[in-house]
Image (cartoon, rainbow, N blue to C red):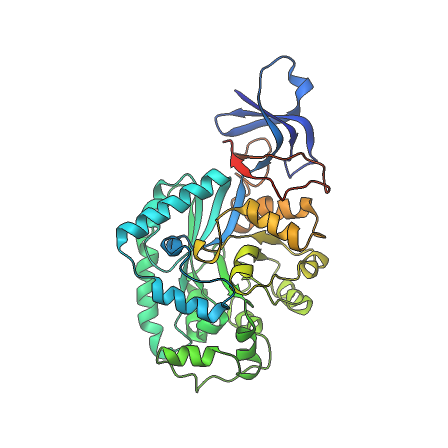
Length: 392
């Protein structure tokens, strides 16, 4: 047995335990108790508080070699252009960067990741990683019917190449409303049984909204720059989200990612569309690319199932869920710390289907344990100068 104690244990599934002890056998939680209940048994003590391992519901690990290659505040379309421009590196550099960021995520306390893959570059690392991965093999055809068959062939090959270690998962998913044709949506729907999980980028920039509302914004010129005509495109008069809802199936659990411009009305539409919907916020990436954050009050008022992601190291300063929590509390401090911790742990575990094993510190789970080096004072806890690190 191993006895790990702290000034406070934050199990998430129950109220914080002062002078708490987590009793472990291997990595499995046997119990969470008060220090007095175990008598003179020695413990490994951590000053501050202990949380379950974090769940990162949105990452692009395969872009790890592109850290620092794009400037902040350029907006989404120039950012995507930089991804295309800088993506090709030698394989050894790509492999080393992926391994480095996977290791850093693990050390910071990330227990599981929902990761976007367009290529096979991360697959070897995922097989040997200590992190649990759900891989979203992301498809896009620039809304061009002529690219449909080649797109399907390409991503079927990527999907087939991904071998899963025990507990990992994978799905074929759409990239974003502005990059997926109705035909490709239909293929993705048929390719995924209802127990698969879907991820889609959503309402990340005004250009995306404008394209669907009235055909304006920068995406037409962006596509034309790649030689793709958008003359066929007819604006719907509604935000991009509604095009996605029209073409996706509600039977699958679906993660809507970014949601920087999502309104109360949009949230209601999604919640009415499916009771299997989850939201993913990537605050540092939103600041890095668009210099804005979602309105979290709209999601709180709807009791929405929010989770937290890091996005890629190309659009962030680090891949750390604790740093994302700090950003939310810094810029929208009305969001309760208890709620943000739920977003980062149990909500994320439920979104990725890992909640039977992780997301909270309770008997029978192997959630990982994360130490935060500051004093727990409930909602008055000052987290801005704190850091997280993995214990187990």
